[in-house]
Image (cartoon, rainbow, N blue to C red; front, side):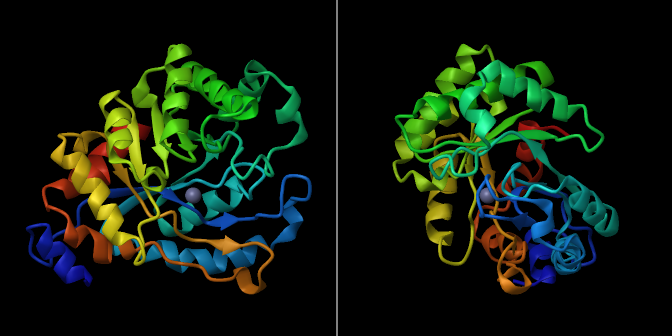
Length: 300
Ligand SMILES: [Zn+2]
């Protein structure tokens, strides 16, 4: 679907402005080398800028106002590069604080293994006061039952959320891990609405999607792409049928410049959701999923 069709789908003439929207889970750059080897010198930020800028600019025609870069620290997070891309494109790009424990802790620095949740939270809270202002907490945990290190990360995230007001987006292995995290979050006196279950499409049991959404947390079906579109539609429609559209988030988990691959490897764009997915859901859902829910979950 091209822009004209997208706009007419929204009920306006093709000359009307597209609706405002937010992409809650994308990436500009990722480096999977591991926490013990990662360093800023492993890529040329000018090259990443040159490749990423046109991909982000493509979003303007669809009304995208903001993109959340979900690459955590020690996986290639580069707030300076993101700020430059944001300035150059006019699309806000939000970065994050936190640590990624998924993939069996390969991307965790050594200190994460020895420090307490309060110590980790202290580090993340210090980052929230830096000039580049992380706007959400991004962590990653493995499948449930969670091990001690994963439990520590979610507890640190909850403390950080309680102190800063920032929302936690947690890369989560499965529904069991989502439930366990939500327990820790509420145990730390943080409201469920501050917790986003990232990659909820990896859990095939819709009952768990419903359970987390009913508890008041956000269920994020990201990774929308040509290969997965049918299951993503099923997930979104399931929660809608249960009256839980107001707890649903969608995004693509797309991008990105792969550090270590020639020319950054395959940089997927960010427009598939607009060009193909939105025409398959009920039009009244679009402003909710693309604008109201992201802002309710993460702030304005
Ligand atoms: Zn991601």
